Each structure stands twice: as structure tokens, then as C-alpha cells.
Figure 1 (tube, rainbow, N blue to C red):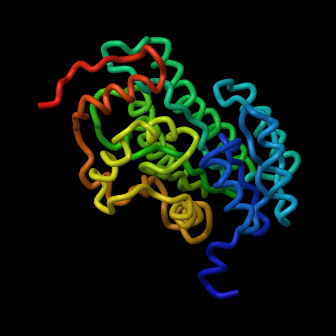
Figure 2 (figure 1 turned 90 degrees about the horizontal axis):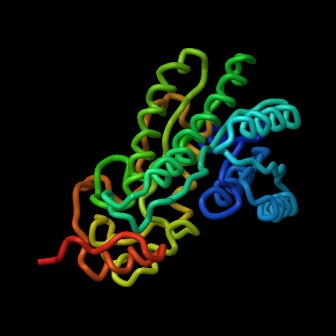
Length: 289
């Protein structure tokens, strides 16, 4: 085995992937399994998890499906305990579960309960997973790698909605830094992966708004959306020995989007389309010149 293959090899490792029932999480599980890891896939939709588990196992990998709602600390603890018991330990955690609960709301109309629910999943739920995995890794002294999914929208304000989503993802970045500093001396690396716009179940309704994909492409130096394949190498670098000297970083995979991230205003047609992603939410309150 040459050096590069050896560095990225995950044979004998166990990886937990949250939010694995669809989209990026399902893809991450497949990539990790292809590199030799046993993957514990978790989300709320058990039927989808079981279908993905069967697909991975039929392809020669090894996957275990465990239903879990990351909003519930007791459920996270039980899931991590089951994963540890069935697999011997946990080496890698990919905290991918999340939601864009406030699409279509401008800040002044965002209900408190929706703001809090978005942070509950995207930040608190992620923290529960970090804590439950981290304390087990610390207890056996063998360390591990935790990868937290954030977003380029957590790296700077983009204006208006989704405010709660952007706030939660900014929190993930600093939580990642803090845990990296706290656990580095005991062998646990904690990093964040920050995608921009990739086609997925979550982004689909937004990218379907007329003009929105063009707007995003115009803000992206490479001029296009990302492809799932372009997330594989960054994920594997952070998960494997290839990233053994990386901790506390936020790695943008964004076609250069974050190089110019900042406050923007959308045109009226995009505002109208986004406000209709979830009916009767938000309003057009800034008119384009």
C-alpha cells in the first residue's frame, strides 16, 4: 500500500454519521465505508437508514442502522452506547444532522420557537454527540476524530434569512475550536467542514427558486454549485491519518464563496420565491433598485 492510500485507509475504524438518512449524510456514510470503516448510520427515519445499510452491506461494506433524534440527549447517549458496544469503540464521528428551519423568514418575523428549534438541532444536538463520543474516546485513551458540519453561511452574515441557521452554524465553528483545544492533548481531533451550496434534500427547495442558483453561481468564484464527489477528499482527510496534524480548523469546500462572503441583498423575484418555500412566511421588505 503506497503512502497516500495508507494515510486515507480507514480499515478497522468505526465511524458514526448522524443525519445519514439522506443527502450529505448518506453520501458521507458510503464514502467512509468504501475506505474500510464500519459505519454506524443514525437519523430519525429508520426505514431510510435500513435501506442505506443494506446498500452498503450488499456492496461489501459494513453498516449498522440506529434510529436517533439528536435533539434528545438521552437518545444520543443510548445511540453512542449501542454503537460502542456493537463495534468495540468509536474512532470517527461525523456530526451532519441539521435543519434549515427558518427558510422564508426575515429576522423581524422569525418566531422565537423556530429560532430555538433550529439551534436545538444544529448546535445543541451536535454538542450532545460531541460530548457523548468524546467522553468515551477519552475514557479508553485511544483518541479519535470528530468532524462537525457547519456552513460557509456560519462564517459571515449574508443578510435576512435563514438567520437561525446561520447563527447555529457560527456556533458550531467556535464549539469546534473550543473542543479542539480542550481535547487535543488526549488524542481527539475536532474539525469542521463548511460546504457552500451542494444539491441535496435540504437545499433543493431553495435551488428550485427561479434565479436563485444563478445568484449563487454569480457569488461563487468558480461559478457553479459543488458536486458530492468534491466533498469526499476533504471529509476523508479530516477523518483519517492524512489529517493527523489538523485540529480546530474550519475547512470551506465552497468554490471560493467564503472568500467574498458578506452582506447581500436579493432581488425582489428571489425574495418572493424564497418566502414561498414555506408558505405564508416572510415578506419582501427591500425593493431592488
